Structures are given as structure tokens and as C-alpha cells.
Image (cartoon, rainbow, N blue to C red):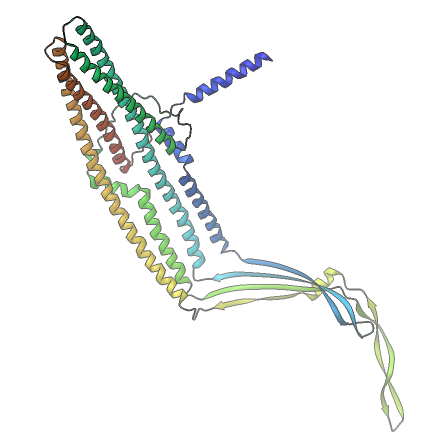
Length: 474
């Protein structure tokens, strides 16, 4: 028993440690965000509604069938079939009805409604895909921000490690009387500043992780982290393409453009449906009904009986007596026998011609025409927005790449200047203040190089995204 408890405990600890050590890749982040994002889930529900609307549209082609049944009790003055007198009694009746109706022609509204439902399903797909594109961009930006913060922290720590070596060496030189104590104080101030930069970089990294975790709807901020990747600057020839060529290609697959184009088609179908209300409609109908009584009935026996004098002939003083059939009181006929005896059928065609309906049908057509123009204008606006976005992304990427190249050259120059200053400082040809300034300049150059690197990467990914290159890999 103890052995099982120990094994179970070890298993739980191992599972916990495994969950703690999970590192998220960009693809895993995007997949998780697309699966759990609330807006995506809401749009998926809209897509289900569109599927239900299509089912309604298909149902419009089917006939309507209604069946009814009623059972009634009549209490009050009714004729007694035995005595022929009016008496207070209770009678019961059961009636059954059935009706079938089908539209033969309805101004093509049913056909256009079905086509509209199919377009609505397609529009919801484009809308969902466009939303996923936006979320993917946001996740990629947040992921790159984490990588930037992590690399910025590593730069700060490596700078501090170099300063620690300089601090140790300067302290030895001060103790030996080679350099004044002021040089040591200057290096210590530089080290303190770099310690503060490390703290700030750690906070920035923590906040960037929290921001990405919140975007993914993950509340375990402390254990959330991205994968440790040997990140290299991606190679791309996207800038060899002109903004116009990128825009033309984006028009062929961008989901926001497809969504706007589908909205135009939806508006046109709404117009067709509205015009259908101005046309005559033809429908066929069939009805069936029957009635069952639970009252006793008088049934003829085939015999006759003499009743009072019917005629008197004065000339012959002859009385003529009448005869009437003899009937017998019996119970009601069987249920199904009455069903067939009392049933009735009705069927025919019905034509409805709209003549005057308060201008509602004509105004509906006019509103639909206005909406068609509105969706066309929105499509043109979306194309203009895409054109501007592509040109902006192309210019931003080009400028970011130039800034990255310039930052790299500046870092290289600052690094050489720092190495030269360090050599002079070590031999006592440079004071600590000038050396600290050289170190501060190289620190700023390294930070700027990291910043421009990730700025270029994100803007490059945005531009590639407009060109149809997926975002799930860096």
C-alpha cells in the first residue's frame, strides 16, 4: 500500500513538473488562441445560425401539413330520437381535420431565399477566417514581444557580466595604487545602472508574457513561457515585389475582401426576394374532414305501423289510415365506420395577386436597392483600405530593414570603439568617466539593434501575410 502511494505521488510530481516546464511555440500559441478565443466562438455560433437558416430555406419548398382533432360535449336542450321530444341531455362528437398546402409559384422567393442562405454560410466562413487572421497577427506580435524582451534581458545581463569583470580589475588597480579611487566609483555607478536595467528588462519580460497569456486566455501567468529557440533573422525576398503586385495577389485570397464581396451578393439576393413579393403567387391545397357521433340512432326495421286517420272521404264516409315505418333505437355506429361515412374532401388552386399593400413591397425593393449600393461602396472602401495597408506595410518593412541595417553597423562601430576604449582604459590612457560613456554608447547600440531586429521581423511578417505566407512559423 505504501509503495502504491509513493508511486502515485511520484507520478503526480512528474506530471506537475512536466506541465510546469511546457514551453509554447508560436504555432501552439496561434492554435490555442483560435480554439479558445471568445470572439471566434461567437462567430462559430453565427455560422451555425446560418446553417439553420439554410434548413429553413429548404423547408420552404416542402408542403405544409396540419392535422387537427376535437372532441366536444353538448349539454342542453336536444331532441330525443326515441320520443321525439326536446330534453336536457348530453351529446358527444369527435371531429378530425387534415390540410395540405404547397406553394407552386411564389415569385422565385423560395429559390432566392435558399441561394441567399448558401451565401450567408459562405459569408460567415469568410468572416470567421478574417477574424482568425487578425487574432493570428496579434498573437505573433505578442510572441515576438516576448522574444524581444527575453533577448533584451540577455543583452543586459551580458553587459553587466562584462562590467563586473571591469569592476574587479579596476578594484585591483585601485588597491595597487595604479588608478585613482574615482575610477572605481565610476565603474560601480555603471554597474548599478546596469543592474537597474536588468530589473527593468525582467519586468518587461514578465509583462510581455502576461500580455501574451491574456491574449490566449491563460490565467497561469507564473508558469507560462515561450519556447527557447535559437532564433535567426528570417530571410525573405518579399521586398523584391512591388506594393501593387502584393496588393493584386492579396485581392485574390484576403478573407476581408471575400467577405465584402459576398455581402454584395447577399444584398442582391435580398433585392431579388423583395422583387418576388410584387409577383402573383399560386398555391395548391387539399383538405379532409370527418365527424363521429356518440348519440344513439333510430334504425328502420322494414316494418310499418298504422298511425291515426290521415284522410276522410265525406261521400263514402271512408277513413284512410296512414302507415309509418317502424324504427328501433340502437347505439352509435362503430368509430371507423362513421369515419368513412362522414368524411369529406376539398382541393383546389389559389391565386393571390398583390394589388395594394400600403407601398410596403415597393419600399422593400427600394431599401434593398439602397443596400446593394451600400455594400458595393463598402467593398470599394475595403479595397482602398487594403491598398493603403499593403503600401504602408511595404514602406514600414523597407524602413525597418534599413533601420536594422543601420543599427547593425552602428553596433559594430560602437563595439570597436568600446574595445579600443577598454584597451586604453586598461593601460591607464583613459579615465573611468570616458570609458563609462563608451560602454553606455555600446549598451544603447545593442538595445537599439535588438529593437530594430524584432521591429523588422514583425513588419516583415505582416507584409508576407498580405502576400499569402502563413504566420505560424518564424
